[in-house]
Image (tube, rainbow, N blue to C red; front, side, top):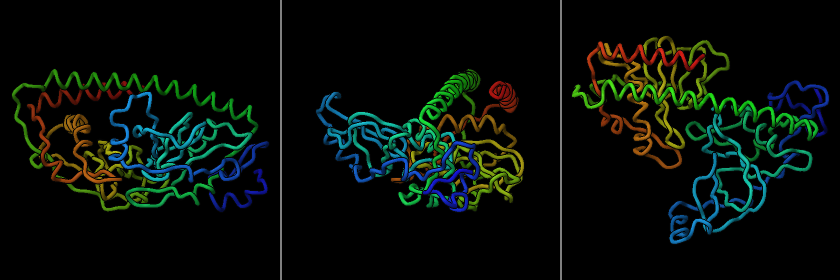
Length: 353
């Protein structure tokens, strides 16, 4: 391992990069980027709305938060190329979600994102990817709304190589992301196929409709979200889209798992059969009758946008049983449920090819 003068005992302090190839240097973030949190300033949505009222779009500037642009504002406080890293409200434990992103030009940043400017010799996109894929599991705090403090962020370790090699790495990652984006588009088309089949089979067919409490037995997990264990023996369902692991189980059944809270109100529904455990704000749903779990998984997924609109809470959105209790579900004949489940299973197999 190569250490520089700023990074003695990196493995003991961070445990992130314990080995680096020859020619690489491990640096603390504060050594390779200027931390400019003093530039940011929060403006609540009511004030922003009043300030942009009657303004033309070309008179406005982007207003950025933890995971991207969250609105517009009539003025700017920074001008140039910067990197933003979520401080709180970012999905830190979701490896596929945005936690860091670059901005350019005139803009405004609120207090939910750290403001960084790479120093000479560090490519902004390289730093962005380094932070995007960083394992911050042991660095964030907070049970429902996790926070990456500036003190913790300063200690993040960035592996550094020559600028040309950084750019080469960035180009490779961008190519991979292009392939992933194409595959994601294919998956979205398959989801649309399922939706079309659902409408064809069940929409306006006159089948009975039942509310939530007549369809589901509802319970929740009992654990904190930080109870996960790397490479644990059982799935651990939290409010993150990412599936975590744990060494103990509390459930052994077929179930739907619905996230009960989310910073942005973007909830997720998963299906599982077997032994698993769950976070205390994750709803564990059992069907009251011998119905198709896949059918009701799809019906729930189709209602997620509505649930986002109905969410309660400020910084962290959440769902209550009262909100869920108003949802209605189509109950088609069991033979049609089975037909739909077979169709979904076939499409799902196409997704993993």
